[in-house]
Length: 326
Image (cartoon, rainbow, N blue to C red; front, side, top):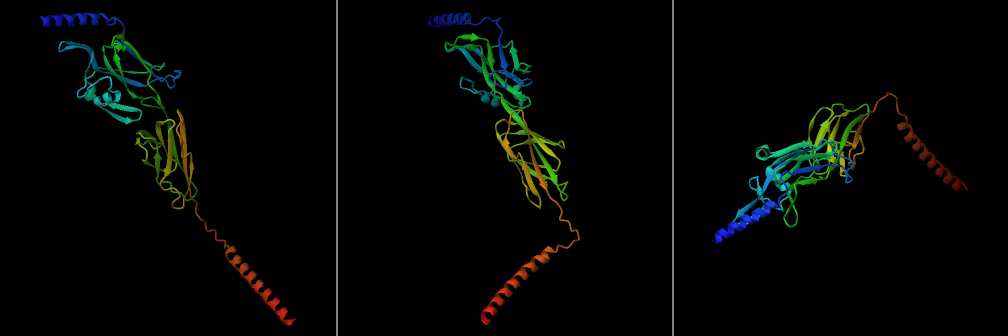
């Protein structure tokens, strides 16, 4: 009899719970509003985002008890609750950071998940609609120029209030933009005794991270703080999307060596948003030319000094002679 009462109670709870659910016809959506500024006057266009469904949200009955809004992870080997962070979920899926403005998802793991992908429009917005109930992970896959990747986020649909009641199937999120700028380092040679084919090792001190770079001779790669790149006179390197507001410094390993005089321009400072800072390292060296003309100054100057000493001695001797004659 008690078992029958328990079942009836559970059925009543389920009926009451279902009656409080938001109308199924209501649009379920997550809207991303992405801007450079807090005032939302400068939209970021062309940023690529993915939205992964990483957990289901359902009502379950366990041990004759009803648990509403139960989170059921869709990823192996992770427990998701209200204290779980977005980066923990992202790491559970698996990804590779190509550089500070691009990541590659672990397709083997993420292919098992439902995901949606889109670019921000001219208003800096993406609307992911017609979504099922669940927990969603938003992650920026590719940032636009002069931007680094924003932090991932977790959103639950439906949203619930403090009492655990469903209040909305729509959610707007405003990711924080991480601004950046570019750094160009150019090598110049001056004088008639320079080595045009010599490579000079340039050491770059940058904020922590992995950055994309290109050279004027079509070499591409990635660089971190403390790494060196070798370039010749007349060549340059451009490091892209370095954190705005951070400090940088460049140093030539062979500076002021082998008879060269080294001069820096903008070799240290701060990166600015949407700025292309240009740093220049100039090495100068000239030949010492033998013109065939004798430099008599090297002979005359010692002679003049010697004559002056002789005259001084003679004056003293003559003064002594005059004194004795008196």
